Image 1 (cartoon, rainbow over the protein chains, first blue to last red):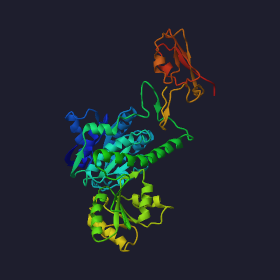
Image 2: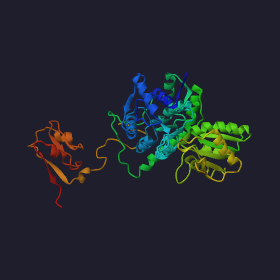
Image 3: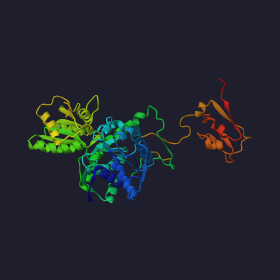
Image 4: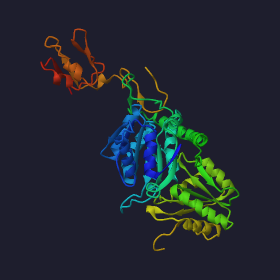
Length: 385
Length: 89
């Protein structure tokens, strides 16, 4: 075990290198670029022995990973915003083909207007592709989650691709100290990939052929079962990691000062980290408020949210907007509670397109609810209002 | 043959997986064995594996599955295969 200080993206590159993928296929895009550069440097320095394919687009990056993964290889790629959107078709393909590809997505706003700053709309828009989705709040969590993602994706009962997201610039370009286990410890943790099917000249099969209507629902159902299995496996994997390496960021949800809380704030990614400061400040003032940072969006931790709502009313902070409805996490939290809870759920949209959200802002949002001044779903700190 | 448990669209090799595709045919390849020089181009190019290669490199056509695409007639260098209409309209 050693500690290195580096940015979220170089930590991603380090995790990717230590996971020993056979194939990396990636295309650079701000703010993900330094991941691709970092891996290229490992190749140049002879510290990465896999195949590194410089593709001409993100659609090709995902296609190359699909081909390699179908042949039994371990694969890695990384992207952001418009790159992720260009992959969209192949994201569905990877999941329906049950290929355990691991991808980092650095959350960035969608243009126009041209924005390179943090916003979750890129990955939230991939909600229904069948990928598992994690959101990180520190560089240590980025490292740990990428390694854990391989263990999870390649588990025989999951066999689905995993996306690990974190906020552009706020984490991607910020240096923090990160504990890095030894290579043999990582090898022991991830295990060797055992493909559950593969393209193999000694045992020829065709993949992706026509499927009749009577059979199609079964492949969707199998994906649903795999995601539900992942809900059980994620806490086991994070606990095993804690025992081996000492770092821990929560299982499906990270709860912070939730005991005896009357209100629980639900936040994601770097906003979740910032929210801890706000919770500390509010607790100083005697407010009974806690934080539940959702680490996993798919599979959605329905039962964990129901448990939170038994103790407290919920305040959901969204750095994304499903235009025509509301923030995605706000919708999903309410959907999880329907029929199981009478807890009130309050919501805010904040921080779109990288707009700064400080702990003072988060405190103000919570206090507005707790003081009974909340007047309905709100876009916090909108210019001109 | 190894079968996989994972639920995705895997098809295993099997003769006639899509039924007797010979019924799709509009034009039928007719082989003149006297003209055939056993070059095996038809056998190489047939996209459906319906040219049957014999031990002496002579060939036969499997009409149960031949879809009548005409590739064999096109690549034959001695015009030993000609395409004939299955039926008059």
